[in-house]
Length: 88
Image (tube, one colour):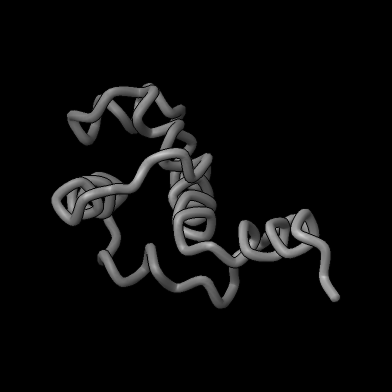
């Protein structure tokens, strides 16, 4: 039987908000932008970008579109977790 803490760790690692946040961070870093810079580019507050990257906020479709546009990528790219480097 899996203990709750172990189960929560597994669920958190596989949670779409966590994966999405990691993907945003990966793309942001690939263009050399800070959270503040991405916030400026998107019109979103820098703390909101941090909340997204740490999976502390649910994000709207409109804001996903703003982030993808600002990063110069298709929205679908933010949901391609196949090559995502996650901490084990």
